[in-house]
Length: 573
Ligand code: GLY
Image (cartoon, rainbow, N blue to C red; front, side, top):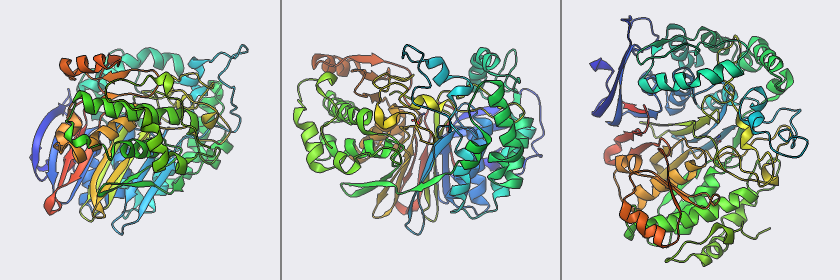
């Protein structure tokens, strides 16, 4: 195993091996999927990858070692995640990529799912106008047209290696299997009832009991990946895979057609960039709210000397909560797919507007959300998204966040094709003012329309210092995504915290409605009490996000940190 370790391993906290002895010689690259470890923090000289699964991070690093750049590694890592991390890694979902290339160019690629051509704004309402959440959140009708494979090929324009090299590790992992972690075993076990309910052809995940160290083999998925390898994007959106998706739709009363699949296109967008003190921050534009929310929140704290308030002090939590509240009120009113709805981006980030938003901020007490309406100018979403960060020695930085929405998306696996379909339609506002599955509200800006992309919170982010990559950041977590990225940036840029403290220590979140601060258990009681005295309602919850950060150290060393909240792993060489 030693030879698989990165250049400089600071913390190997995870070790996984299979129940049955397996040969490690059958993979296309130098990784043993039957016995592997993962690192929570490494420092590397040549390149680093952080993702939700050790095998996927290792695949990314192997691709860097073979001469690939950060984009090659990001593509290979995503494909591997589609195999080894099926609750969020995907072929049947969508995502966003933000990149800073070694020539200084900034890129944003939108491969968000889109509403099928026969979707309509009231499709999840019954005849009394009440929402049918079971239709928008699970099963065939909840799926938007998948974008991931188109996104991989759009990203490939900036890659170097032959595509076959990038996809082969994923094919091997699917065909020859890998041993699952304890978390995965628990997750698969909890999925069984839904699998039986929402599938017409029983997928490889159906089993009486999964145990840590069991081998997962996914032959149908391997065959889908081979069709993509052999026919490119058409290997998914046309031919056999498209036929299998549409047949699955027909069996389960879904509405995605062959035409919808053929018409899907990933879109290159102009990244949402802004300056914060000496840094330039690059984020995702609409249809993700992530970049714009982060911009609003960072600018609302910029001149308030938050650094002097201290990490997790009642004062800093209060200030961050109040800016989160105001930004999320705007999200509910103004944000949606800008190809369909005019989002007033310039107004929402103007200095005068953001100053006026903070006029009601009172350092002694909470501002009730009922008093913070969307500003006058012209939800929780899924917790099961996944983020990966990549940085290479030439200064190519890539931040990618992808999702099926809910864990395992719609819970429907395409019969004969082996991948889960998303339930991303629930990220639309299915009824104005009505919270979606995780509490986010929206309105006209995010109403369903054929071909439209549902509003997202995903916030893949790159921070430049002296015009060179300094941080590559992102996380899953639905509506907690922008606030976790916000917190991570404040922790590193303002509190001068170590990268691991910024990633691993307690997080909190406010999203306007409901009017409460969600907090992780580790927030100290003294801080809670001080916040309660100011009038805040606190709600303790489970882990917030799974943040993955790469930070450039002096001497061009790369420090990569994976979140301790999951099996996430940082690898490098
Ligand atoms: N479904 C999670 C997001 O796009 O924000």
